[in-house]
Length: 313
View 1 (cartoon, rainbow, N blue to C red):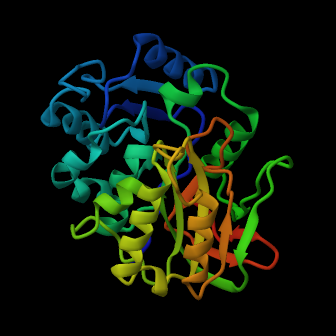
View 2: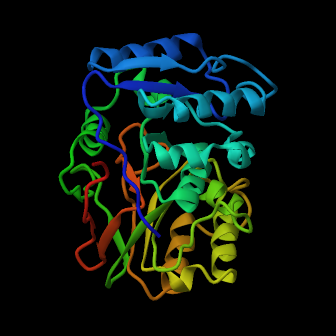
View 3: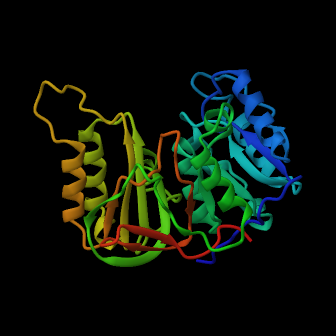
């Protein structure tokens, strides 16, 4: 597959804000997220329908994908940043204008439910996207300095990204040693699993797979890992990385259960590739930005993750 990179972001560039999943919880978050970006020197345009409500969605599918495709087709827009996740992005995948995005590649940012869009984009056109902070979640109110530094470095620099390093107070853990290299893919585990059996899941053979999740009981994480194992995905990976599994607690702790650590360790024992856990990525305020689609080296013995190229041109 030919890998496509968007031009790096420069001050004065236009950023489009979209809500492809759930409605932002307040207009203040939309406005303050835009103000944050403008203070940094960027121009901002907010999607027409981001405050619409259709059940748990930010408007109808046509409205949400209309905002997304409008920014994809607008050559002045250099980056598209999700305001929030929630649910709804998978409903749009068949309607995204991938052809226009291939002709005019641009930076795509988000995480959680946005995983579905990012993996579909990579599968369809090979575009590098960024699983990072969203304007109505992290950016609108005192973004964490570590998150901020990691994010803007990846979007504005054409230098090789290099090591993805946790903050000093959060060490990673090696669950299986070894060295490997592959394309860095993944994101939210539940969303990744939802793409299996569809034309929107990338080929994960020889990939370095990064997984995180939120509000999923350990037995659900176990079930998703079993699905990857049964589908033959785990045995063909080059590397396996576990981010943060936030609030992933037993649904009934009074009954017998496997801990999340036990489940992840079992997964590590079932693969032949290096496995690193507790990567500073996921539904947390202090987070790494993960560039999907780039060549990445994993050294389990040293617990190192190194991205071997830039994410933008």
